[in-house]
Length: 183
Image 1: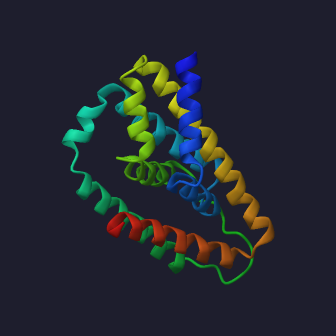
Image 2: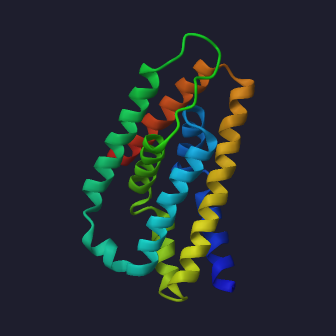
């Protein structure tokens, strides 16, 4: 149980203010909360499982530069998509739902998490503890972080006009995309 709690705590702390939380907040303005949590949760479970199972082998074989470019371009596409779909009125848009929305969120999270500090932390911890305990703990830590960000994102809609939230979301997506491309 120590390994589960250790990895959950470390990953949760590492995710505070990370791009995963920013993505969760911005996706929560476009998709249903459960869609964001489900898509991100599946992506986190998959990436954490891969990290825990293969450890440093992944870091040696994945072309990190190409993954960063793909993720950066994807974030810029999300930014443009958000700006192109600005609502003229002040009511929140109908929430996208279904499998396609879960896939969009999941794909964005998988690309964003590849080579991220939480993936590296999961790999490192899995060299010292049972892989399945680290997988469970790191996934729990990330899910708590994501749920917190979704709540914050949804709360923003109660205080800010939807147009402002979408512009800020687009700017955040663009900032993460540019950071991935040039940072």
